[in-house]
Image 1 (spheres, rainbow, N blue to C red):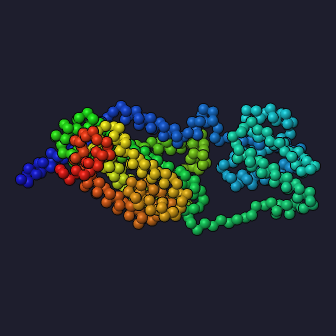
Image 2: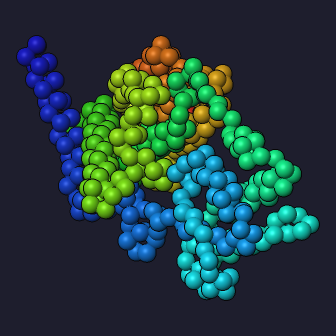
Image 3: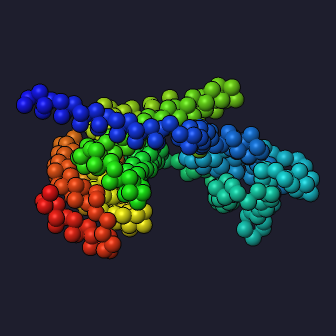
Length: 451
């Protein structure tokens, strides 16, 4: 009897491996998989190096805007330069210009500016208002620089007015020197460039997982629905148990998604490597428009205490991802067994997509609602926790205990889905009722203990 039992287990294992391998090969050993991944690789590298590609075709991300000043007052140029320098120091990489004094006529300057990014400032004395100015540019896109120029001109006028009031240059310097403010932030997570770091880290953490979950849900559902639609399910179930068939779909889909996720990581590293190589050749290996190099990016993460959190954030996040993929896979397989065509599956998939989209937006907006009880409570909820909890943990809004509680809830959810879902799967997999999909789902659920 034991020999027969072992032999049956071996046969079932072999059937499970065969179905899993067959399902996986249908996804991987296709021209579509190769072409799609080549396209994803090219697109990923292109996105990471987008500014360089645009620059190659004529775009300009790195050139300095030239500002020419025609000073007809003979006293305003130095004041204007000082005022603009203060703004440049405050705005940093967002403002890149060079300023110089011009001796050319206004008509000559205007002609030279045509078709360029340059800006000309004409300063004239005004008896009633001390100073009047004219800004000439053929570029309407650099609104930040134009606002800085207008602010600097107004401050220059004020400086001129004070200087004409017999106030000494030393006193003027003391009046206009910025206050020396020492900024001490006891909360490391809100230190320098924290918002910039999170604006980069959050999409990197959230978007790939979001799309991979959609991918696994669609893949499992469409494959099961296709087998039911073509009546191939009857042949399969006559040779293997519904449990073996169910597990083969779940295992194959998750292996495929983890493989695709690993490839996405490789593609991203390839894009960063290309960017680093291009930076070594052409200079300026920075991350997007932030003008922060990869080394500087890491230093900022260390300074703000983000890097030390990665030691426990990464493994906990991976565990959450795996358990959440399993949860979505289980519910996708259970719901697909109830449907009889693609339209049914897309309809019954609606609530899952609503939960997934809600979790995506909650994660993206979590930084705006720091300390919100609702956001923290939502991070415990299975199906949402994988997107929301790692972000909150990275920002220091929840603790390791909180994320461990979320993992425990996910384990309980997966157990319930597995134990109850298999019963539903056995009943629903050969159900071809013409009832409305939600009525059919209710009937199948009620009859889950009948087999």
